Image (cartoon, rainbow, N blue to C red; front, side):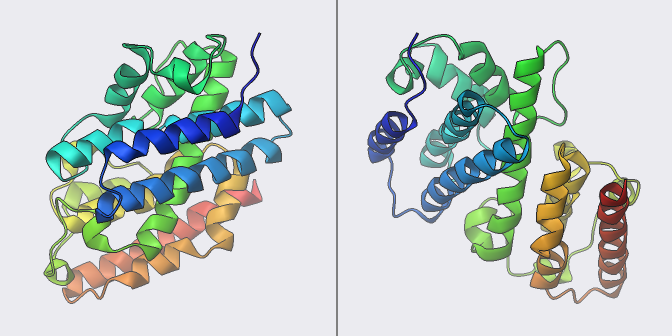
Length: 258
């Protein structure tokens, strides 16, 4: 049975990227994001003392997790045109593209389930233990790097479909604020303003599966960095963002203390 050759898979991925404009800001962002998620998946897998096989599998899943994003940006010029995880699974498995990345079908179900579930509101029921493990790893790694992206990348590249220069005057939708303050992730349909998308990204802390992931957020000071990145000129929004800051930090500390 063929083992996972990550170096070979990476070379295939680089050839795949030649179909897309790597000078496009959103494409460039997603390429960097992919490799950062590979690194963070490896970090999480090693922290869990997983086998070398599972570490390499986690890296391969990370390499492929957003493969559907590139066509989405090419066709729609934003990150909202396709259900990119579902499209990524279709792209890889309907026409056998996955065989370019790994010859064996031994891990197909794990790869498929992990990619399909990586961006869902919650992981679907009925997964095997191994499928669930890798779904949790890629979800955490993806979210950890989203914090990096949101703290460093241009907002117009990160949120090309909703960002505008008037965000400093925006309000937070009541449902989004209430869900955050009750330790809930934000449902995509409830996001109305750019700030709703911003709160949705902060609320990723409520869906992290591993203690090491919460420690990573704390150690990188991402809550303060993201909240401080925008100057809130609406007084009600300013107050609510401080409440969100306090709530997020208390949640992280409570989880780490336990």
